[in-house]
Length: 631
Ligand code: ME8
Image (cartoon, rainbow, N blue to C red):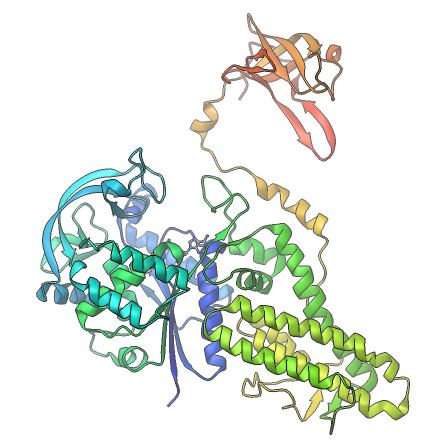
């Protein structure tokens, strides 16, 4: 029987928020699933959507839709995105599906029958945005949510609780006897100290909204999102349903079970989920990998800062594999990584265009030029450096197998790039173009190119989980009709036939050009008309202008707005001689709080245009005067 592997992503909130950060989780799981499939594991890869809760109910009302309509639309767009990103999931579970609802209700009932869920009263502070309750000590000083900083609401309601405290010691024991249960170790230590501080029973139902799964015996209560959401990992396997064969195969008797989550949701997976399983007598067979965040230079991606990058925007410009490789190669397990277009383009040129693209192109060109596309396995080595290259290949394969099996993709890829670079160096050392000048050295030339070929072939196989499209193009180019992963050893190829006209896989990008294209991407976040209406813009006529003493840039202007004369300090001196402004009618922000600039009062701001190495230019009106409206 084949070994099994069950890998899951978190289920995404139905909020249309799939950006490059949370797509990292899904891509990483895809790499893990493909890797295990390539090794012959019977792999089940689950992803899906977390569709219940107050936030979704409110978003649907605001959009004039029913919650079901809203989540249906978002599920469709998300699934399409995953398909376009070559995510090889086997099942897409949605928490609004019957197959899930039935199981969650049974889980809840069974925990209640056992006495592990009981009815009580909850009093405390609730954050709608994070759908989380907080104790007084957890809130920020001003009473706002410690996670998102938004205001919290005081609530007091009857609700059901899950007895966490009862399982505290059992959970600690499990974590301590299974050191690789939570990885990386830093996250494991955080979880242990959280549990050691003492677990409070967890509120697991709500009566304040309707969009969710009702407790079957007490339907005014809705089962709170985490019990609902976490159960997806079992409901998708048919647990507690008529046909639980997947549950038996992948969970009870499975070889590998891996949940992958971002660091912000570790507690739910490392504490609440295993306790639910203990209470249900389901064996805790999973490992938890907690990854860091994809950040921007300024910090977190957020709608209010306006710095969110969506995968489609990157893919449209640089292709899917460039995005997949960047995210997987830049993210060390457990830490954060930073996404910036300058680094992205730099890595694109270095890793893809130079190192990998060149190796493929140089090798295939030479096999074509010297041997009309065909090679034979050499009978022995000729060049003294051959064993070294063969050793590097062997070592890389070992490290790749070990690190990818343990979710350490960055480590594995760094090794793989060392092999690519070693192979490029091997070309420079062996100088095939010199060897080719001697008919007597044909067998030696064949051997050199065969070494290059084998290195490329194995590289393509190891790259397949990460950049499947590129690897498959490489397979075609090097004449592999099937992706035969069994031959993950040097020297397994008997004869070679490569494509006669090699393709250029990745063209070098001009960094300056590309960064220019991104400038519009630096737009500030969206504002609504109410925000805009807060600005009081007026036409003002410059009646006096003088340069500020000891300043190259600043002018002190007297500006007449209707009957009032204002003093405004503006940085126009390098672009306009002071007298040239007199009489100009400019646009002024008239309700800016007055400030002192170098001791001079400034009561407003002049609107200007800047950029593209041009001098600052004031925005001027010709016909209108200071009684005209500006909007
Ligand atoms: O948490 N970088 O859903 P979600 C990396 N529904 N990962 C990020 C990220 C970033 N910038 N931003 C978010 C939920 N994530 C729940 C899960 S599972 C039973 C329920 C990750 O849509 C985040 O850490 O808010 C999480 O792992 C995943 O995206 C989904 O987040």
